[in-house]
Image 1 (cartoon, rainbow over the protein chains, first blue to last red):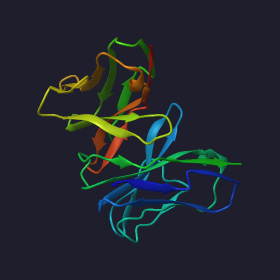
Image 2 (tube, each protein chain N blue to C red; image 1 turned 180 degrees about the vertical axis):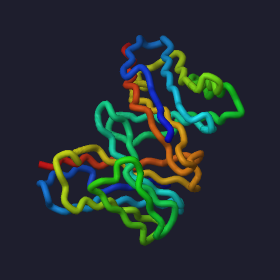
Image 3 (cartoon, rainbow over the protein chains, first blue to last red; image 1 turned 30 degrees about the horizontal axis):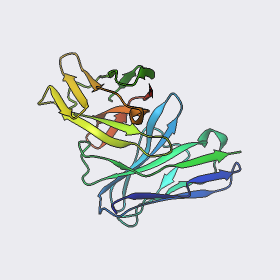
Length: 114
Length: 111
């Protein structure tokens, strides 16, 4: 089944404790991105990647890192999480790098930083 | 960059009624306008999109209209059903590689 998977789905952590949220897609998509969803703010892009070893900042990149060592994986790294990073996170992928491509979203990761 | 405004933020309708959600965008060069539906506990999923060379597109009970002159586009859902209850997001392209999403509309359909 074609899909985007994220792990973990739920995570509670404490301020400053490094964490990684994994994202994997099995559709051979070139483009992958991370979004955060907050009440009243909608979906905001954190980082995106147009291909292996090619990443760039989205609208809200502060406090996050990403890497794209393989085409299928695009982990999101919070080196020192803070409470304002408590949010619902989505990974998405699309076949091409144009914004006119359908984006396929993962199921989401709900993060609580205490 | 692109700015997308979406209204209303919440919408409640009776089953069988129609629902309309509107979005405006700022970049006149934008040429692709998708709508995503997010059901509870799931990620957003594309339900319909429209490109700038057409003014309307339909798919069964849902339709999207585009007014490029006024820079707005709308989602129309007819004969609403309880399973249409969800959060709906409009979007417009930015810088050719990203989508800017509206803040979302929570649609509630009561039977």
